[in-house]
Image (cartoon, rainbow, N blue to C red):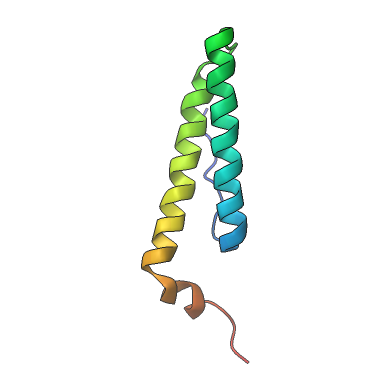
Length: 76
C-alpha cells in the first residue's frame, strides 16, 4: 500500500508555497483534534508531516538551483 509520489515539478513557486502553508495549517488542526479526541487514523499525522517535508525539500532545491528551472523552459 505505497503512496504515490507527489508531482511537484509542475507546480509554480507560488503554488508550492501556498500548498506548504495549507498543509501546515491542516497539520496544526489535526494535532489539535488529536489532543481533544483521538483520531480514527493517527498515522495521518505522520503522512502529513512527510508531505510537508517533501514540499519544503522541493522549495529548498529550487532556491539552491534556480538555473534548473529556467533551463527546462522552452525558448523562442
